[in-house]
Amino acid sequence: MEADLTGRLARLERVARVDRAFFLGALVLVLATAQAPAPTNGPLTVGGATISSRGLIVADTAAVARLATGMDSNGNPGVTEYDAKGTLRQSMFLVNNVPVFRQYDPAGKRRAELFLASDSQNGEYVIRDAAETLRLGMFIGSKGLPELGLYGSDGKARAYLATDDDGPYLVMKDTNATSRVVLGVYTSGAFGMDVRNAAGTAVWTKP
Amino acid sequence: MDPTSAPDISARIARLEGSSRRDRLLGVAILALVFATAQAPGPAGPTANGTPVVVRDAAGASATLSARGLTVRDPAGHVRSFVGIDEGNRPSVDLSDTSGQLRESMYLLNELPVLRQFDSAGKRRAEMRLDASNDGELLLSDPNEKLRMALFRTKSGDPQLGLYGSDEKLRAYFSTDDASPYLVMRDNAGINRVYVGGYVDGSIGIDVRSAANSVLWKAP
Image 1 (cartoon, rainbow over the protein chains, first blue to last red):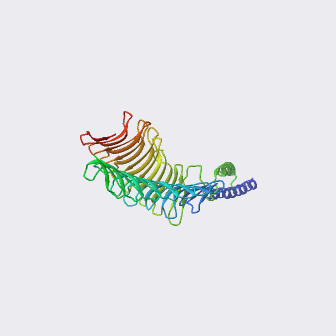
Image 2 (cartoon, helix red, strand yellow):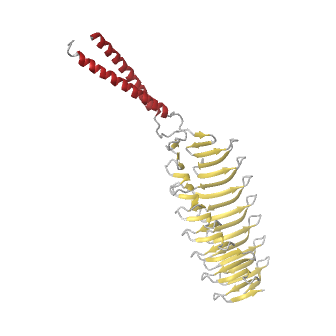
């Protein structure tokens, strides 16, 4: 009887040691694999998408970056889109805290953009030609007046339609920047129109 | 050994043996559960359990990918860009300046697309959008958020450029219908003072009017 009890006790002690080791092992495994939202320092990549501390870049199957969002190397936030050749074609970003939405041609030239002026924070929409010369501008000028401007290939104004609170005015200019047609309100407050010669002298005025 | 206590000890050992078997069974079950649900602690990839993924650099800038989108913060902790679904459940791209002030946003507002630019005071100054009729508009406003310039389509569908005074009232508009275009200039009382282009009777001409809206000159 005593020998039997001693044997059973010895087995129990052995089993207890094994069980203890087993539970300790399980505990180590649980602790080692527990998932906390701990930050990571390295970029994360899923296929062609890479997240770094500065944002997300998505590349196409040819490994060309096609979209990026986040902050650039200067700390300006934005979203940029690239064509299949990797040329920047469209971007929405802040530069020195000023918002810009800009579209580019395949040569990388700025062709259209909507932005706020860096000084007045007035809105502007501009269209440029292939040489990046301004050809059309729609903006609120430095004096706070809204204006539509049309420009020649030399970037000089040929026509503008603007208004102050007294009334609007349309001015047409020649290549020498001389006003040749004026229509609308004059500085006197009167409304009318006139046609001028190349020297800027009125040759016809109404009423 | 006390012979009278042997049965008691035997019973206790039997209970211990039973308890040990149950514990072992429980341990195996726990281990099976751990193996079935544990995840490798390697480089954290996007998780399927809703846990945000944070990537941080030495300077303190960070990007956080959550179920709502991607948020990028600068080293000062200001949110500078967000791409995803905003608090109003709108898909949105938001860019903020170094003080954290929202300065540019592209999103769907009531399911209509809008690109909006704000000044440093948070005022809307420029925006491009589709209106309720899904017609395109380009709007420029002054620091008081008064509309000063607009490109849009009228309710009748005609394209129009409008210029507005600081009172947000129309001063000039240039538009066209299928018959002909027209340019109208108004004074601060809202009176048409210059008219150029097609008249409603189908003729085309030009006239200048007085503050009382009487024609001072007309041609042809």
